[in-house]
Image (cartoon, rainbow, N blue to C red; front, side):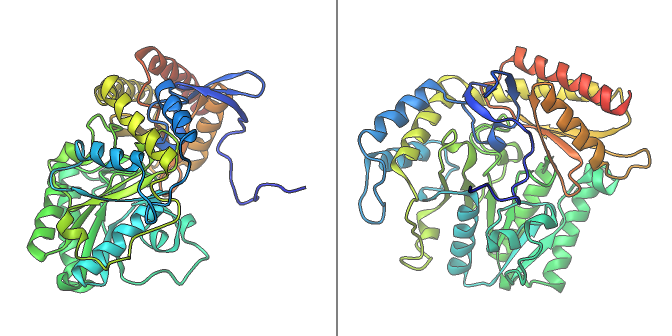
Length: 418
């Protein structure tokens, strides 16, 4: 009898029968508050009726139309709709299936367009599991261990993770930018550097937001040296942070944006957006793929954009995000086991530390597992896996946030003895 690979490590023991909105129902009929959202994917909740209808209708028309062979209406319509929400000047799109594919497409575009070999990524960043994307990932060695040698030409600069360094944010930011300048002098000359890749909020790296000074510093250096600024919005885009794009919080304009996760409410779809001028600098035929821009996924993405707009989900993410982070901080204030609560919008992380300030993965895991047993599904993240993250669907309401905080408060008290 065939079985799933033992290398797949399950975060919860839940076997799902069906989902509805913010809830998952297991095969025994138990209801779970899903504050994982498929790692930030089910932005409109599970099985939103509008998205389901759009997908069902499209399945009856066309499931797959390979988009370097034929065009189809959902692809053209989605491209038009995205043009209304993409950052100014980014008017050309390439579609793929996964975040990793989007990252590699952006890497390919950056190197071909600039004719430079190197890229700079941030310490703690996550960009995927395929070889190039894993080579660009520093949120944990588990993503790249055992597959070396990794891709050459990737260099790592600090991210202003103030809590990790034990500094205030301004000190951490000045350090990060100074070290980036030092990297240009010692490791990757600016005229050898194609792009800087950055997440507006470190995802797998621990839900650490960037800040305006840091992002402005990246933009200034990119402009000064002719380097492309690539903003990875795979987890932060489509309203997740309380603004449509995560980088909107920091008043910065990217050269390339990466999209996936919340774009299609669970259907596989990703992409990159850049200007027509930049896209035209890459090699003809260098973009493609069998399943990219799938017709059903595109139809679901169109419906997702409609739900986000019609139900004011960006505004809801901002309001519920404030409620969630404030409530999580109240809980953290009652125990020294949580060193910091941070995030943007509906990306909230609680970092567990020991009495002497060291990462406490064991207590974080105990809290996450206990929450699961009590009907609240959460995930851990961070280089030491000591951050418990809350990433509910954007449709979550105030009562559901209160329910989650009540469970979380009880869980933290039980596992820490506070």
